[in-house]
Amino acid sequence: MNNGVAYLKNGDIVGGIYQVKELVKEGSTGVIYKCRDRQRNREAAVKRFFPDKLIPEIAEKAFAESKLNIRSDYAVTAEKTFLENGIINLVMPFVDGESLEDVLAGGVKIEEKKAVYITRCITRACVDLHSIGILSSDIKSGNVMVLRDDSARLIDFSCFEVTGKRASASRGSKPYAAPELLRHDYLSEATDIYSIGVVFFEMLVGSSVFANESAHWEENALMGYKPDISVVSRLYPTAGRIIDRAIELNPKDRYQSATELFNHLSSYQDLLSGNTKGKNLILVYGNGNELWMKPGRAVIGRNNIDRANCYVSERHLEIEFDGRRVKIRDAGSTNGTRINGYKLDGKWVEVRNADVVSMADVNLKVCLS
Picture 1 (cartoon, rainbow, N blue to C red):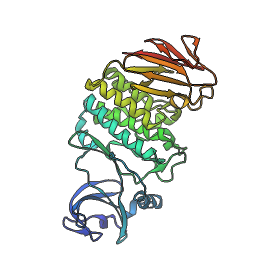
Picture 2: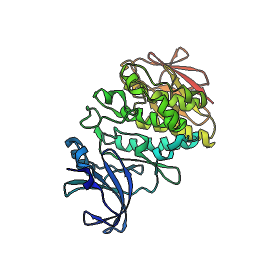
Picture 3: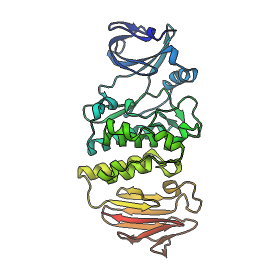
Picture 4: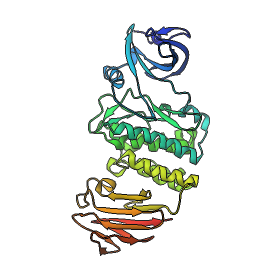
């Protein structure tokens, strides 16, 4: 079947309901139209897949996507999928914005504060997706829509995958795809986090520099060489540390959840916006990895540090931060908690800047700034 049958003219009616207003975008697997939903009197986006480019696995995903129970203000998922004249049509809410790929066209760079905000929005979408065990598996600048208020929406989940399994259809998009996706290995939340880190990097350096810097990333990653992001680390040290952790080659060394990354980005955004009250609390461990702590009380354990570390308990220590002072106590861990070498019990103990808190064999340096 010729892919030309997927194209429509302005005014054409598809599905008996959707009247074409304009062609919005053409991709490798299909075309997207802005349409008028005559039944609900609103605008909608309709993606029509190219029959010759549609493998059975993707076709199956297209119908499954509209049945996913995803509730998110930041992820735009299909509401309806139908077959008409041999063409699969996928209907989504219309997002009035510009793709990040187009925003970056011509080598434009995005200033730090805006780039952090956009990354935070993408990550929030992943928090919602991951909460029901779903991965995008194809996060890239072309699948991010930037709105007029600079917020962003993650789109196109036709290659969605499931956490804890190997990819059934997705191969990702180079150079955004995590190494485990390229190797057809088991996937986790960290798979999407890798791609988020790459998009964050792309925004800060611009598309031209990004194309040069990332030309051989996927080949190098498969050979065990981590992408070089020093061009960002020199200009934006905090962003560099976030990206560096997000794109670790081993998924276990990345942020272990989108929620963890989201919280880190939220603290970073507050810092850039001057919204912080009091001090910032960062716990630094391992090879410069960071845990950014918000005011309040939290429990820290191996899920925050390294899920494979059997010496650290799931609920190892409890921390309380009021914006100025930090207190810690052991949470009934198996191997104990120490501050500067002194073992704690269940009583609260105040810690200060540069103190070292040890959870079994993991040392956390307290940084109050």
